[in-house]
Length: 186
Figure 1: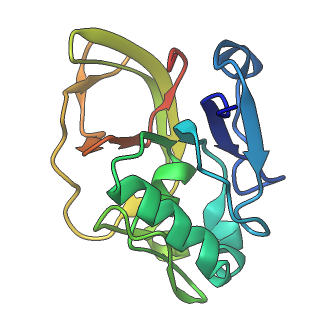
Figure 2: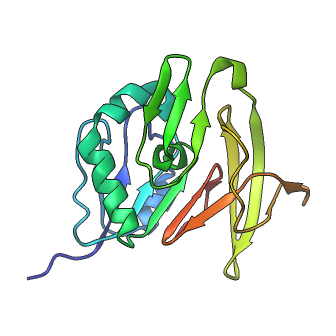
Figure 3: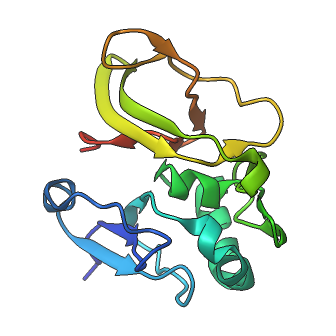
């Protein structure tokens, strides 16, 4: 008997902790894994969900989990569907730079993120954007930034007043990633 397709969600006490229970409830069958300690089973996975959190605080541990990073990269590059929000997007990038050094992440996205104290800048607010005819809503809250120019955006993002923001929506293959924490993923 073939296993049913399910959603695999990264969950960790701090690195990937910004999860909405109502979003999880709408995902159907889910499995959780801790990217710092477990290699995810992505066989029969219909979606890999990497929520927000503070991966910059655990960059060394996430970087040391090489098999996990490799498995996620292979899944994404092989056409697997991934949604990555804020910390999850950072984890998919090439690296995270902190005051302690530069730490390799999954390398799915070719960007570097800075979490250095000198580069900290608060970005906060409600967000909405339309992609493929569907409107998404969420919020943005982070201090980290792209190191270098931000990536091109697949959609224009607006704040609560309808004013365009510079927040990019990254679409690469079946990967959808952004600093926006999306309320209506499913």
